[in-house]
Length: 192
Image (cartoon, rainbow, N blue to C red):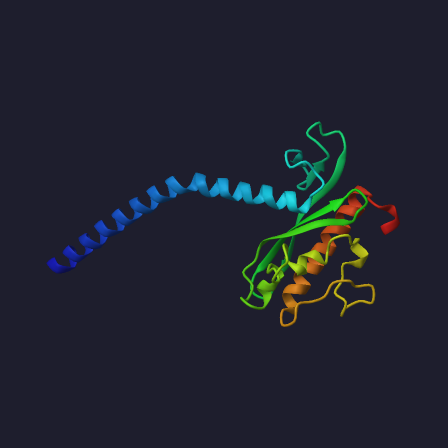
């Protein structure tokens, strides 16, 4: 019985010390983690809205971002919002930039944990390229063009071989996001 109490006491002491160390580490690293997340979001917004002044992209109360030409915030040049799609092994979050005519001006995959070597090709850059080829396909497309070529005659997006589910997840979520913004804000009336 004495041994059980002794082992229980040791276990309790180890648990308390480990908890204290974890709490300290969390307290010290949390501000840095939050700052890094903010910087990553800011960078993603500038990639999704390349024509907007990086200091003039503001969050709208309805949950999307509005990009302005400059910090005077007089002329809107585009909008950005997150799109979510169920991939093969994760939910894929994509930031989508749309200009005032309803055309995609940039996208950035924010989070995904797809299968390495297959689904992760949605974020991979080919040798010699500066941006992921899969994401580049979406630029300058209106929502009625945002379908996989294999699924619809008007589709303009090539699926990734071996990663059809990831390709579908990104394409359909971006298409739905663009269509909802175009419809809600009545952008590019010729796109309806």
